[in-house]
Amino acid sequence: MSTAQSNIKQGEKPDRYKVWLKQAKFDLQAARKSHEGKFYEWACFQSEQSAEKALKAVLVHAGWRPPKMHKLSVLIGFCNHANDHFKRTKLNFHDLESFTFISRYPFLIPGNLNTPHEYISSSDSIHCINQADSIYSKVHLILENGANTFSDGEVQKIIDREKLIKRLDGAVKSLMRTFDLEDVYLFGSYARKENKPGSTIDLMIIA
Image (cartoon, rainbow, N blue to C red; front, top):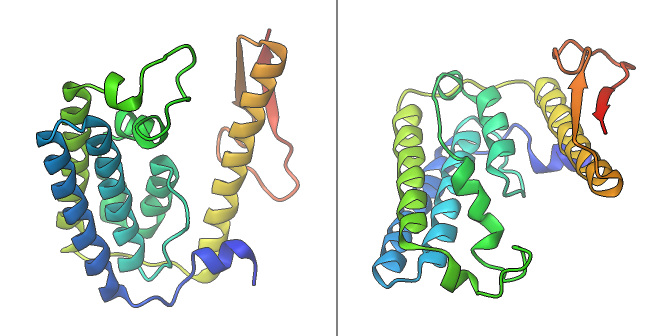
């Protein structure tokens, strides 16, 4: 069994999603407490944690094993395949995702000599809490309507594509950093999601 298959697979007890969803609610409550105490950086991080656990609740509800990852956009990609109701739901998460690391580590914003506690504001905290609350509320509603699961083979295809996207994203960032490029675009069969085994990856580089 591959590492990917050991991280996400069929066979988990669907009712365990309630534990994940309950903890997501507790994390959201903790975020509000941190905001009240003016620890805005922790409010942002706890909000992200709430959203992360709510998304993993969707996967567990569908019979998947929750993956050991934190990137909300990747988790949302999995959830889109695990639950048809989720796929039709619009979520705002990009601002929330941006605080995953900068809310905890003081060296991630170049040239900024302030700590996360100093540069993350009350409005940042409120924004994160509101986004997390929206994600939690929508997931809670979705899971009451049931979920659709997929076979192991279908799950593996989803995982492989998501892994490729992550690797490609890292490669593009490395290219842009090394060669000071203006932009890099994906085109061809992968961009159209029509790729087959052996398909090449086509990139357009703007220098």
